[in-house]
Structure formats: C-alpha cells, structure tokens
Image (tube, rainbow, N blue to C red; front, side, top):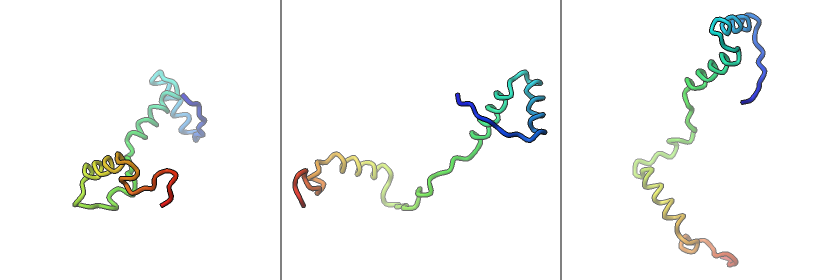
Length: 87
C-alpha cells in the first residue's frame, strides 16, 4: 500500500473526521472506500482507434487467423530477406 497526502478544505476535513468517528473507521479507510467506488463507477474509455478501420468483410477471428499463419511462416516464405543476405 502506498502512502499519499491530501489537501482538504476545512469543512470537508471536519466532515471526514465526524464520519470516521460515527462509523468507527479510520479516515484513511473511508477515503480508500470512496476513491475505490468513484474509480470503479467511471466508464472505461476505449482507444480512439477502435472502429477506425471498420471492414465488414473481415472478422476479428479471420484477422487473428491471418496473423497467426503469417507469423508462423518462415521469413523466406513471407518474402523477407534471409539473415546475411541482401535483397
């Protein structure tokens, strides 16, 4: 666990102290719970590149199969130069 420092307005700090006492929990425990709830409730943003090259004719499975076949071929079968030989 990492230690961190927070700067709270006086009124919020007072509310935190009262709530910690009321729930018989530490201030740190309340803050961790509140932050965890906030972070988990946030929508996950997707990379902006998703859907940019949409192709109805090629499925993800087909793309993965092509990559697997292509990467499993020997370099010469892919048209790449052999080590030590110039193209």
